[in-house]
Image (cartoon, rainbow, N blue to C red; front, side, top):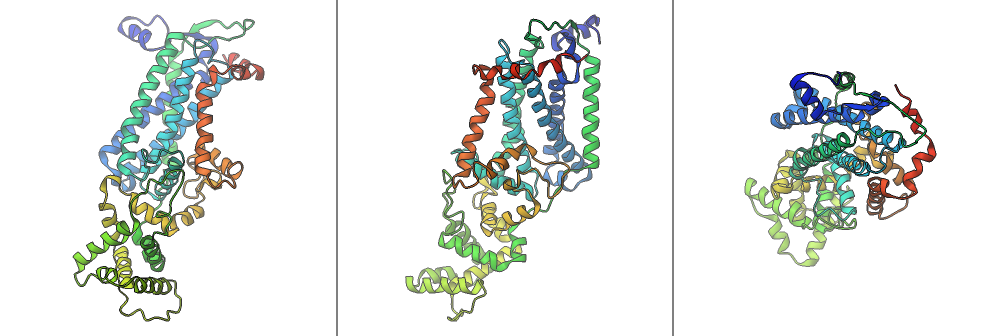
Length: 461
């Protein structure tokens, strides 16, 4: 595509595209920004279709699985391309004045892209989504932001992922490109390196974009997005009814992980006894009828209540119970809730207590059972296994490989840190700030010149 394109097309081309570039500007390394926009367009298109069709479509329908897989691979490509794009700009010192703001906007795009990718994982609808949401909640709680960002809140994450973050990124990308178009591709900062200015080869640019689209679709077909059955309280109760009963007792006694949670802040200010015992049991009595054993229990003396709880704990631990379990109202309550859990009703009732933050209550309960950590460890997707870089035990697709630095921190600086989430958030926050402000930091912004990496990219034809 030449600069002398006639008519309306020529005017549009000059208004939208960069028309003249240094000779190396037609290389693949200087197409990365455009390829990133291609990925963003794929994500917007597939995301819109998935939103309109619904979660059942993208988890069980053939075409839905394909769209979900294309969405995943486009996200993988987008992160990789933006990282490579920043690397090229870094190596060539393309962030020098007057292009410092261009770098800053690009770095902010990367940050929002990583957030967008993680929020997307929370919405996929499988076990990995559940576990990542729990881990993400710990991160935001450790960063003192858990009151505002609750990754266990499906509606909040949905709004962030499909509306707020895409609009922010769209605005940043548009501003970023307008700055690049206004100032052009950076020429060599060294006076002894002279590179001729040539017409931008837009044909080659679009061919590369087309190849990228084909690659993403092919990868989505060969390596579809994995989906492992999500954990439910009913499935846990079917496998380990006694474990669910013990968790219920811990929720009643305010000794569960949720009841004793503290990670810089404690956003789980709800009363676990009320949420997990009192309200569900009231629903059970309303549905099943019969006497309200919880009312009987609360009418007992403190000593008798303590005895009933101790007897129930021993009963569900499989220990020999010296005191008869007959006539123990607390044991009857817990047994009823276990039956309710097995039927699937319990989880629905718990989440219905606060639908605007669902499934926060059920995910916290599942976490309290210990099942989530055990299964995540078996699948190798825990952060202490070098980041959530696995997808349900598979190596392809590679998963959230960009979280590997969290695994490195967990194994080194934060290995024995009781405040790991807080300190990890602070370290990552400092690194993000350093990345964004890099062009403005004296001496540090001259590191690329000392590394002499630029000539590799300038010599490209």
